[in-house]
Image (cartoon, rainbow, N blue to C red; front, side):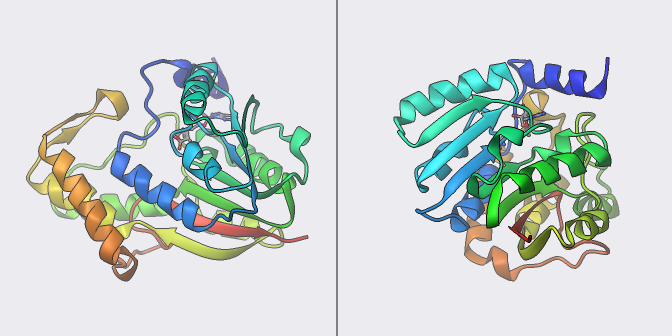
Length: 265
Ligand SMILES: C[S@@+](CC[C@H](N)C(=O)[O-])C[C@H]1O[C@@H](n2cnc3c(N)ncnc32)[C@H](O)[C@@H]1O
């Protein structure tokens, strides 16, 4: 079975959870919300079950939610129906072919979509496709994971005697330098955003005295994570922008980071 088919199968499984950490999702979503405007026509490619998308749709003029998995698309449909938003359209589709949407959007969002493509060639194709759907001068708010941020976090975990958080089989994180080089001439990087303090507290500090094992729906964790993650988010919301961890490469402590990219023609 090819990587693509295995990944499709993974996202069709009813047990698959996109992001277990609801506090991190809120931080991601709030960052995207801070970058979008009421006059925007927005697309959320790989919207999953639409947990973040409903918040974007509530803020913008129009929202297209595209999702490849039938299972997640049907969950998104239920969520969108309950939200009763009239400016939100849900479609099936594949990020490897976005030719139906050329120059249609002011803003495109991808939230941990590109990392589901297991080669840099496919990832570049997805990034090119996303660019093609933007109007001239449009913005791409990209929430994706880098190897460098992931490794910076694991390096500190190892230093305090914790094991690495493993890279899950269906993810291929972006190489920061290669990404930045690829973006040249296609996008300007207007902003980068990281979650350093949140990652330090929740992926290192709390783990020094509490147990978190496994991944996604199969994770087994001590109850303290429920309160500790919420407290870490609160602290991040208050002072997160001021707390930056120095990292050897890239610019993030922790894998997920935000980039605001403006289309260049
Ligand atoms: C990590 S999940 C993120 C979902 C959503 N953005 C969120 O924040 O919850 C990755 C999403 O990418 C979708 N995806 C995977 N391959 C895709 C493809 N070829 N085209 C469009 N979406 C795809 C998956 O089905 C899944 O919904």
